[in-house]
Image (cartoon, rainbow, N blue to C red; front, side, top):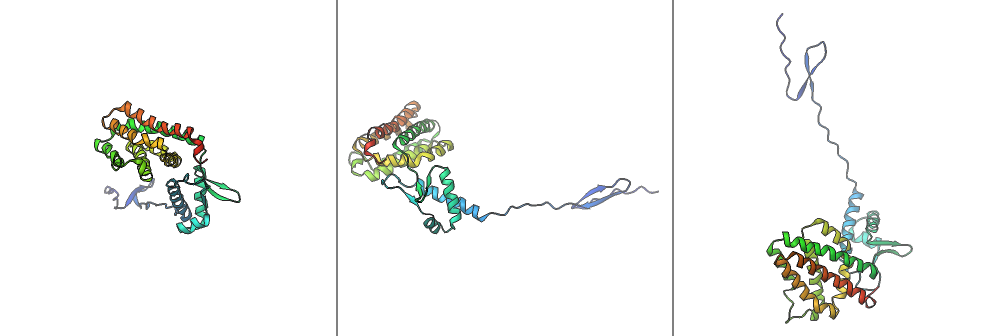
Length: 258
């Protein structure tokens, strides 16, 4: 009896041997792709949350003593979505501590007391001093020098005292740039949580003559230390500069809105 030939495997199939029989082939199973449908409302909720959070963080909520209120219907119309994702986004913002639902009044953007603000400023001082330390060890020289651009329009011939609004914007941008230049995602995320409130109080206090008298000089001294890679000095100058704001808020708190 001639020897049986080995079973031939056809491309696209697998060989399968049944006990007591000769080898035969069976078709390969098609790979299955499981796709979960996108929930439109969930997507809208996330987009609404991100849009509202970004808008709130860019607001100067301390510019007026009046509370900043949010209206669901108006937000729904401006964002072009139904009110359901707006409600869900607001619930997320409330968990973040950015807004609060008040019975029979609506949604209010949360403002902190002066005591809470002082605590936040002190926390910012610690974070910014660490950012300064990191900058001296990792940042490129040209990126550090670029910090001077924030203040290139100010000096003896153009005093910050005569251009308070413009200098205030430069001041805020400088402090945000310091954190960003550290290239630390953790520092960036931590400062984002308190930026809304610290920024608001920086803008309120920068117009006071006592703060304006030292602000530009201290900023340039911080940049000098960063450029020279003087780690300990840069860290100390950044920390002391922001702690000076905390002291000012404590001392002149009665002059600022509560």
